[in-house]
Length: 220
Image 1: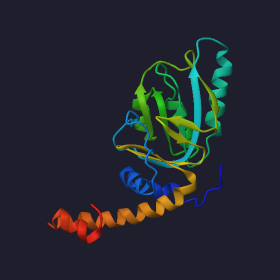
Image 2: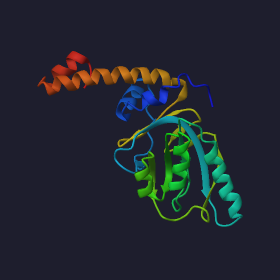
Image 3: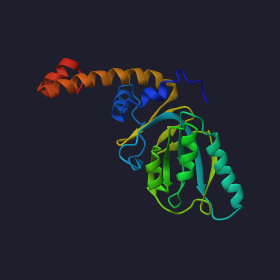
Image 4: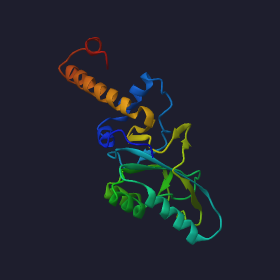
């Protein structure tokens, strides 16, 4: 993974809502950084920000089960602290994540998971409070149906490239991918934008008309 510019980056991005992140990247000409809207949090209050750790899988019908599970567990063990596991499942049948996976990642300070696929044990993961974003849910185990093929390499989800070390920010509005080479610049611009929007919010609460607030602060 590329050297991280600041260890505080995930914590600071966690305070920024995805709408602000997309607004800033729109201004920078990065218009296609939002993950498909079908990928949603297991519960409305879930938020996550961290360095992307991409993995990819494919359906399976037969083969050595022990080898399949060992490979998946090896992938889980490679996810580093302050990261967000991002799985491109290429599958619409199996659960590609579950409670024990969430427990393991949480214990090692991994920040969350974004699955272009499914989870099971959804209620347990919600109780655990581990931020998990998925496309669908199913009780069907992955072991006889699906396998992880590689990790640490870029994946493309809904036309959005996700590379190792990019920053993932996700909340109830959806998920956003911030390319690592511009992450620090995007963060600084986001923090400035949020400060401006807080002033606008305070003004409209006082009864300032929307157009007047926009003319005063240059944002709305």
